[in-house]
Amino acid sequence: MEAYETLLKRVSHARLGEPAPSAEQLDRLFRVALRAPDHGQLRPWRFLTVEGDARVQLGELFARALSAEQPDATPEALAKARAMPMRAPTLVVAIARLQDHPKVPEIEQMLAAGCAAYGVVQGAFVEGLGAMWRTGAMAFDPVVRDGLGLAANERIVGFIYLGTPIGELRQPVALDPADFVSAWRG
Image (cartoon, rainbow, N blue to C red):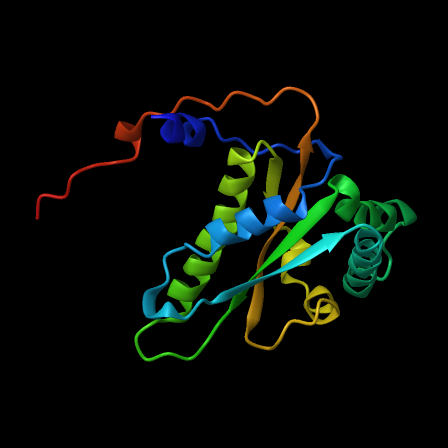
């Protein structure tokens, strides 16, 4: 099946350039994301898109966060923080919206948001786009969370970098499911 062949070849791609995903492509990626498993139909996710000059502003936010965490950060480290959002023409901030629920614990909601984020990544590959899901310290930084306008019940699941792959796609390492799967016999 063509779908399986496509899914089995998906790899992350760190070098991304223009053109950025079109509005139509982004719409399809988010439609895929919305099909994530969702116990209780809570839809415990949301996304922010960051494009154009907003990437520069996000870089400034990252530099402020680094300065708050490390007041003695070097100019080189601050420049690196500022440059992070410039690695791709489009970023998607995947956010978990955690809700009190008697049957759906927070961990399930986090996993659902992660599945939705992975839907964006999978959809990007199907569209012929490159994608790289990154977390790192900025995903957990309170200055970044506040600067992005997250509510107290929200957590950044990751920053998904999207664009056109630059260079050859690497071939995925062949993995054997038998190395990861075993039967439980009770």
